[in-house]
Amino acid sequence: MNTKLTLTLEKDVIEEAKSYAKERGQSLSDLVENYFKLLTKDKLKVKPNQLSPRVKRLRGILKVDKDFDYKKILTEELSKKYGV
Image 1: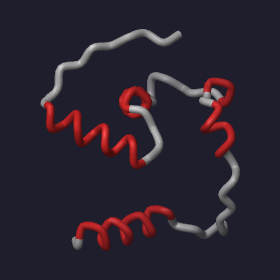
Image 2: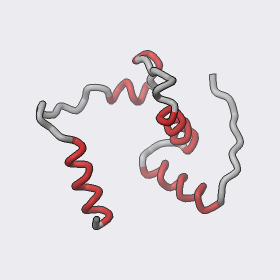
Image 3: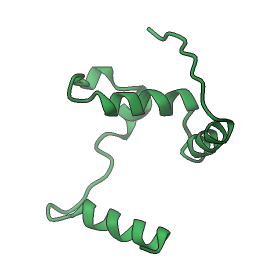
Image 4: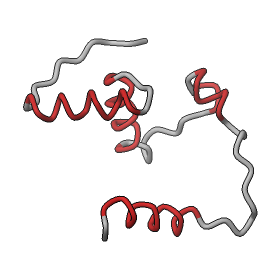
């Protein structure tokens, strides 16, 4: 069940968040909800039948080698992006 939540944030933060969500094909509400789920993930165990239809469709579509190190790739890509 969805319930409305009102947040008070700086206008700049809202605009950046809207832009970020749009780039990723999400609504701002989805972005906030996913962030709250991430913060509380130890308390909340998401079961496969609780996933959104979009996430259910995406599960299992990526096939990678067993020795694939996503943390290494992520670090490299972030270093490229931010020049660190």
